Structures are given as structure tokens and as C-alpha cells.
Length: 257
View 1 (cartoon, one colour):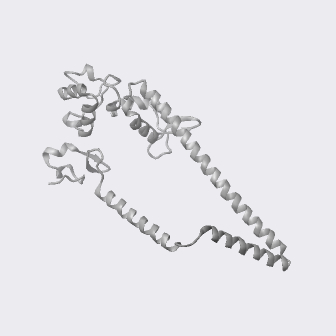
View 2 (tube, one colour):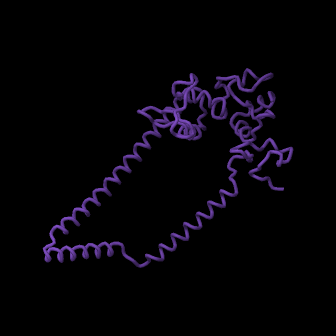
View 3 (tube, one colour):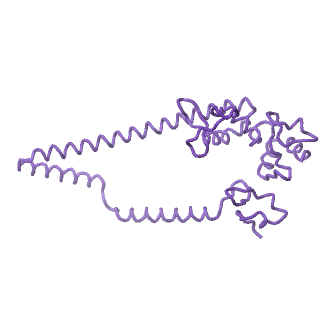
């Protein structure tokens, strides 16, 4: 029997596989890397089919039409209209039409420059946030293979404000406070939390927290945060990542579970 990706209740899952489901947004989903909700996949396919159909209709509608020839015809029409207005003594109308045309061209160029400026500023902000996050995480033992994951996480939390990376809540407008509950969260505080929340991004000796480890192997696993091999924090995806990146640590975590 095929496993369902989404369940309304964890009780719907086979008892031996219940630990593979995690709660997200009020439902339980299969915690497997790369898995996608079938409804979202169907929606994507439907949208893609609609866009292809719209593209084909537009292509058929304008087939055989030369854009350059159309522009030339429009320019010639405007010239003839200006000549008619000048002969009729309607100079003000000619000036008004030309002014509108010049303004439209200027507004178009200005919008293009503004778009390029905004894109450049966004790119600069991303680079600054990436560099700052990598620098802070490297001091805590960031794995070289975790750069892309780390920067993606940082971009989801930090935005450039007054030239400095500032952490925001998921609403994108509320500044996230740090440990003191008053000042904005620093990159260092965010990385400290990440060491516990996503230990697979860091070397096994990153340290920085008691986590859930106890008993044998605890001293060698401090700072790993939740043990994905423990029953109450079972996470198959994390298990596979740790086993691939650090088999020795995986063995110690299994023993401690």
C-alpha cells in the first residue's frame, strides 16, 4: 500500500510508520526530503498547461505579423495626422501629442532604470546577508557542504535595514528580538539557535547547548540539539543526513537514543 503524503490525524498512519509523519499547519505530512503534495503538483501541471495554451493562442494570433513593420505604420500614421493638424492650424494639438509621446518614453525609461536599481539593491542585500551569515556560522563550525542551505535559511529571516542584516518574524515586518527580549536578534544568536535546530549543518564538535542527549556519548554530542534517533524526536531525513556526513556521530546518537 502506498504511503499517503498528508494525513488529518497521525492515527491514520500505520503504527510502525507513525514516527515518519510530522505536524505542519494543522495536518501531518510525510517527513521525506523532496516529497510534494499531490494537490500542489496537480495545480502546477494545470497552470503549466494553461500557460502553454495561452502561448500557442498568442503565437497563432500574431503569426505572420512583422513588429517592425507595425511600428513603421504607426509612425507614418502619426506623421500624416500631424501634417493634417498643421494644415488646419491646430498647432496646440500637435505640441500636446508630441509632449505626451515624449513623456511616455521618459516614464518608460525611468521605470526601467528604477527596476534595474531595485534589482541591484536586492542583489547587494542578498550578498551582504550571505556573507555575514556564513562568517558567523563558520565560527561555529559550519560544514563546507552546508553553505547553500545556510544562506537560504538566512535570506528567509534577515533583510538589510540601514545597511545591517536585521532579523524579522515570518510576517516580514516585525523585527525579531534576541535573547534579551528587547534588542533585535543578532546573526550570532540566530546561528546559536541553528546549531540546535539544524545540527547537520555544523561539524559534530560545534558545541553550544545541552540538546536532548544524555547517558553514553553525551560529552561528544553536546550542541547537537534534538537527537533524530530518539523516539520522541524521530526524524528520518536528519538521520540520513547525519549518517552520510558523519557516520561516527550517527553511531553515537543511536547509542544515546
